[in-house]
Image 1 (cartoon, rainbow, N blue to C red):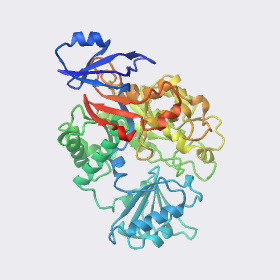
Image 2: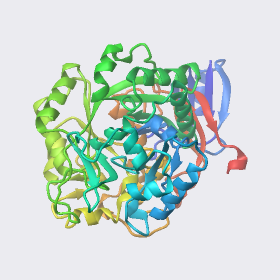
Image 3: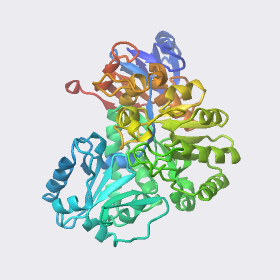
Image 4: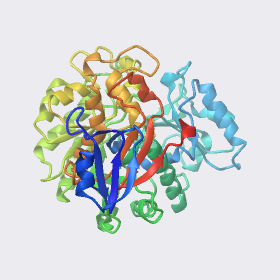
Length: 534
């Protein structure tokens, strides 16, 4: 017994503009897609529900290929600074929070971006001390590769003026040589370890909030990396199991396994007790470099606006090789964070030396700065590129100050990658960027910031079909699910994203509106926009 979906435009995504009239689903699976009269005849007596799309536009369920799901949920529980337009505004938010929280309780905020401020000064230790002398303060930069803390936070972490700096970490200092509260890359762990641990209920609450928000944005699933950040890989897995299954919040969660969580994950028998069609585990995740905002992405040349550095290598070459060897030992693909071109050089060399296990696919996460020869190498390796189209709109034009003369570099080269036959999947890296796939599609197609006309990299624009494919076929392929997800076709999962308007026709800026009419996961309507929301 199943459901007939009809009454709208249904794009299968098998090829550009290919549509069917109706879809029949049962038990979470598409059983038929085609002519409505034929489906009615074929499944006569079995259709127990008819879902009228009311002119809506159905796609295979959109899936975010790279985000941090619990981290996204935490944005509903923490101080949000992404809309601040000056350092003073950040400091004022912190000051106001001190009035709400008991003395000694941590103030945790995220999302600040000095590149969008009227002044570019960082929220350093002494300034935070002035507005919050009795509360430990920790403020993540939007990229999460840099944070700012006050003296109370340093004291809570037991840090003096000359701590032992972890490999791949950077500590900022004032002109007088005193710690200024700015910590980059691995140095962040010195303070993060002092934050009181998240409770089981906190994790579950954050997950629920994240999933419900993702539903409202048209997402039916995501590929996420959460296992190493909350004190225990096992309890994080339990939180996912509880929310997806016991609390019945259906969402396709594909979890990457951070290399720091690998041992515990193996001890937990690879999470097999919690696996289901909604919860699975993928590649081993590792970081090769940092981010462009803090000048820690590893480049093959010096930063134009700081010629003292080329960025930060999170691991030595020997450590990277041992991590790849370890992943292969356990039959795992590798998903590696690499923003700078030199970071990609290091990993591509290793992936060629240690090929991916049969049936798996390695993943380059981000790949914002590449070179033509690197893309040639990638075309010879079975590798996926997890791209975040919204980075174009958030990074330009300031990123050019970091890079300088782009001669010989390929910047955010989505079209070039696709043209060379390199599979790409689309994500947001939420909570770093807004989670909406429609915003990502808009960025991929226009390469403009919303409301502005400047185009960043005209030749690297994607077509609407290519952009939507990133979040449907692309995400399915990255997780090795191309045979059962990412298309509207018999045998595929009954996961759908239904929009109120057709993005293939009309103004592209319609994608900036709230277009999600309905979200369906495993044959279940999990979100339906009310008329009052339109």
